[in-house]
Length: 501
Picture 1 (tube, rainbow, N blue to C red):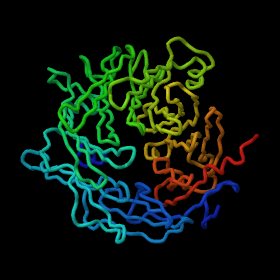
Picture 2 (picture 1 turned 120 degrees about the vertical axis):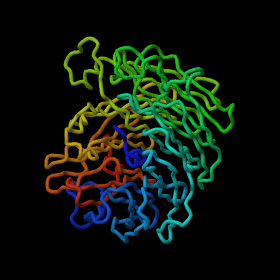
Picture 3 (picture 1 turned 90 degrees about the horizontal axis):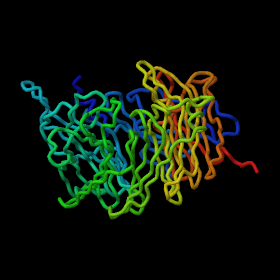
Picture 4 (picture 1 turned 180 degrees about the horizontal axis):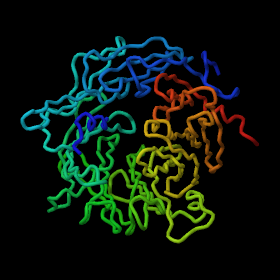
């Protein structure tokens, strides 16, 4: 089915207030009062927090109107500022360095040819004194005519926040289960003021391959402005549903000049590689990780870890870790281990770098559901800087709910020092609760409930949770019928103090 342009572009980019949530008496959480949805319907992001409090961006469902809400340090709302006057097709808000921007697209549909023409993407800076959009917008993608009905784009920010990557491509979208299928991609790199540094249109297909065989997975930009592109390159069959291996995971490294082009395909063996991601570390090295299976692209028999040096001349680390029998039985909820069984349907959800070069990742079990969103457990792994697994854990949180409750059912992962934390909901009705899990550097795991859902209807929304610079966590809560909302700040360190001896 042909996607609408709008839906495609939206894929881009210790004090208590009145009427508190039913937190336990010793939980250090600050809460705002309940607010009713009025002109806005959903919280987009916490843009910033400083000595004056918290600045939260909210949109309406159509994403053509936005407001910023300002809360003080005790979560009392100070004022709401309407940001938008023109009803444009906004695709999100971003905070870069000390500036805020709204992103929006424009296009013209040719009624005769049914083609989209003059498609473009802009960034409009928000004035922090008036909270209004500045008059002049910044062109991120100049106007062009779409040749395909399947168009994708997104942006990425470098680890130091000083480089911004904006990319887009037109894909061949008629193959079931294969997304991002294209040979060519446009990449543009900007500085923190959104001044364009360079742009290129890059062909990623092997020499002589005219047919589209490259599936775009992820893009990142380094502190130096180098772009890395994670792909699958299909062999003969463009499918992930076959019983034979059809694709090879490949990383491309692209710079400003034509000669700045390097391709790396690892020799890890003949496996079904899936749920792959990568990150730049502070030194410019690339850490690449994901799962593999012996049988299917949606199954996970083990996990791999690769580190490539900043000069792209040497593979520093290459490790594969097969899941042991005890871990698989725990994840699969089995008392005995049948032959050839593997965990399945785990989606790589979060990754976090932390002290000493370690990397922590989470993968959530989300089996296919036609009518319900399913969230049945989370696998957690921490790698040291040499690619060895420091610890692995499994957290069970079974839940099947209607798709409209999907926003409540994932999780948020973050690290603080050598400790790892995860917050999530265990149910959303009267017998449900929100919980935080702490895992120390030795892999010791502790759990703590921070909100009970017995006598209220505001549910914690993991996708808006934000780690603050003062060792606390910004939280968003929504009423399960989406009529009201509120915010909170949780001291996740104090919640576990004192640690038992």
